Amino acid sequence: MTENEYAYEIIDNETDARHCAQLIAEEFSAHNPMTYFDQITPTCFFHETSWPLMKDMFPEYLSFLVRHRSTGEIIGALIAGDLYLQHEKRQLCDTSNRLHAIPLDNLLVEMDNLFISRDFRQELKLNMVLHIEICAIRMQHSGKGLGHQMVKAVCDHARNKKGFQYVLVQVTNDATRHIFLNKMSGKE
Image (cartoon, rainbow, N blue to C red; front, side, top):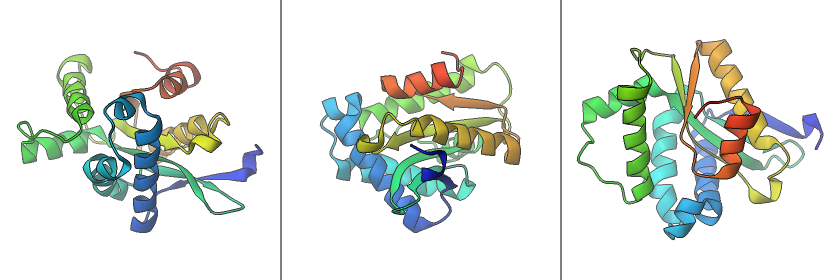
């Protein structure tokens, strides 16, 4: 892999957003241990998780994609947003009694709420905590450091352009955990 072989771009239009949500659905359904075990189809994951998240968050311009420069193919995507805005939306909509079709989604929402109410130990403010919801790289492109570079691009953009100080990520597989703990010096 050469450094110029791939471009890391902000997802800024609905066509790319939809394509990225589909990529995430396909990769999670096939390779994520939790969704694979639950036999979640790409169609279900797209309609219940990746597309609703993407529609909600890509207007914040914190979600990124990885594009292969020579082919133009999108081979990776990451959905991220401001944790403060997400928390405010949840408070306004009162989704506390809403159950997701995918049980893992319920668990992750509950973990986010525990982080905010118990673990963070300070008032949540706008542009303070970047929340990386989900990321995926096409399996045939994995092992090239693209996930790490995409996360680095997102974090650099969020910090330099919008002043974010922290990143919250809930991981469900070892590769993502490795990126955040070992390569990004994260904490559990």
